[in-house]
Length: 435
Image (tube, rainbow, N blue to C red):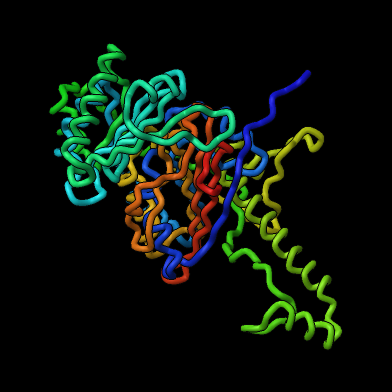
């Protein structure tokens, strides 16, 4: 029996200090990832051999210990108070573009609204989104691309025929003539379709969402309120968490400012066994990879509420495929699991991250996991050093797929200035974010 090959998946892990320069990446984490969704079936997501924390909710997980119980209660209360809303409705694309002046900042790459087409059957050939920059991105099949008459680019993936068109909606971004051409093309597209688009959208806050819904005749029944659901798991193995940087490759025997050739000569002069020392570095890196693997795997299992993590679990050793942390690397305790389900805008997701980062006395560690909408033509927005979107408007090419993968998991550990972070990101093969 020939089984299909599993989808290609790539994982990247980075670490840093919250208070250091690398902390800006975490402070703008959600800004770069505009679409987070919570309506997929969990069953198909936790099947990858490495990145088992690929959750489709915004999940926050942290342990409870007797000595910090009051602080944990305060963090849980602050997070549970966070809620948002979104709208699931139908509307014409041309109508959205007509209202661009009410949601897009005229001179900045900012929009108070994010919107995405939605299909109950997964990714379609033709999808579009309005991202937080105020850029409308269309992903089209060959036929509609040729008919539309707007300039775009073919996706750079072998065997894929999709085309992408990026249209900044700021009036200053293009000439009046080009705007008229764009508007006419989009109206004609709506007319050929003969029906409105199914869309999901949310504003930067609840009043903004409600105002746009009212302006477009979307009834209150179309508005979904997203609240936190909290669960506490008792008596589970909780790992000790440290987040050191990954051991870096180095030129053995060379000092600061020493070339590789000079370093080699010094090694020979001192009789240093370079191969042995390089082997030690590789072994340290492999140990670090294994530790991170185990940690993120634990987060994924905790997100599932897996029985294997409970201290009283006694599985059959011959059939068990997961080994929980051992008593030498973990303690038995309780774990709080918070979850939000819905179409979550970047402002809300970042508010959850910021609440965790601002906690003066946090739990030993906090893990946050989110999954982007795989059927979106944009899932990652490159940022400059200030945390603002790049002015060139380019986003990594990707194929919108109902079974695609774009997941991140952030773990924060430590207190105050000593807080460290570790971010694992996972993307599918048809995503050019990392080449």
